[in-house]
Amino acid sequence: MEGATDVNDSGSRSSKTFKPKKNIPEGSHQYELLKHAEATLGSGNLRMAVMLPEGEDLNEWVAVNTVDFFNQINMLYGTITDFCTEESCPVMSAGPKYEYHWADGTNIKKPIKCSAPKYIDYLMTWVQDQLDDETLFPSKIGVPFPKNFMSVAKTILKRLFRVYAHIYHQHFDPVIQLQEEAHLNTSFKHFIFFVQQVARDRYTAFTTSDPVCIS
Image (cartoon, rainbow, N blue to C red):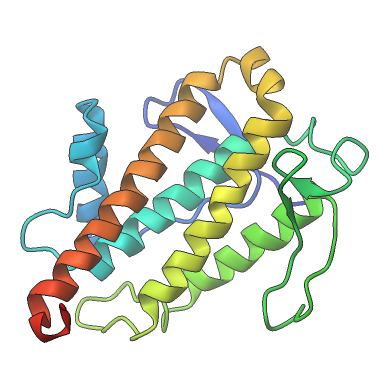
């Protein structure tokens, strides 16, 4: 498995990440959006932090935050990889009622049962590939997002949610031992608020742009 070292904004500690961090190019509009999100998040108001800034494109806002959540989950999972092993987690699950099998539709078309570390390795590599694809996540100004962008982003976020779920159900004790529970809880709450807000924004955009469709 890959590993990397990431230093947080304060530079006060180094944290192992599961995959290399995905960086948004400095000077780009997406970088400005990320800084706006970080500044708002720093106020402690998560509801405010997830709201689409006035005048901004919803696709671009979702793209920036999807990259950010990939990086957050990447770091959170990186802290507990020593506890998430083939032996301790022979299947990818979130409690006894939820078991996840991996398929990406390209390399692995039929869902396969695999260990949690293998599943998360597949997942994070797959997400990385999506984020690096300029036809899906364009980083240059003026390059349009594809028509299926929201569908792609929804699938990415749905699958990233499974990593949160696995950590909470299988590895919360190590998270407490590492004193990372506040970080995990804030990240997860931020994630849920964001998904809920995007659902509202998409509904508003749909209903205001095509009122004929409303019965």
